[in-house]
Image: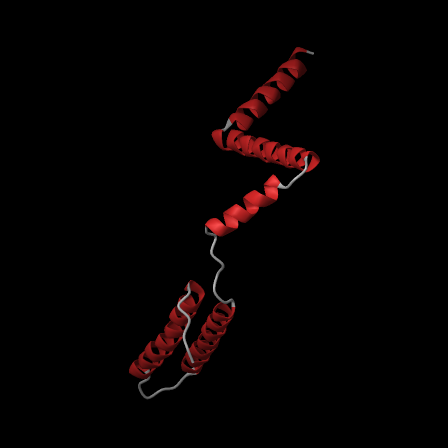
Length: 135
């Protein structure tokens, strides 16, 4: 069996190694603190070690199964550039409207993070209260 060298395979190997390390350290700790009494906590600890081992192995297997990631190199950017170049004017105008809308949403978030919205709300509340008091 040939091991892959992509990032998903390396991450899966790290999780697999962590699973085995968890079992070794866990059982070593249980044996060191065992003494002459085996209680409910001992069985609970063993069960927790086994469950955690199985979950880490399952997670590692799932990550390994993802396969190598596709690279986002120059080839993918040139293909996306070619697809934009082949758009007609209606598609380009729709795309431009969507980009403008996203930019406006970003500006709204920037205002929210700067506290401008809070200042506007305070001003509106003050105006409403001023009008209510003068009536």
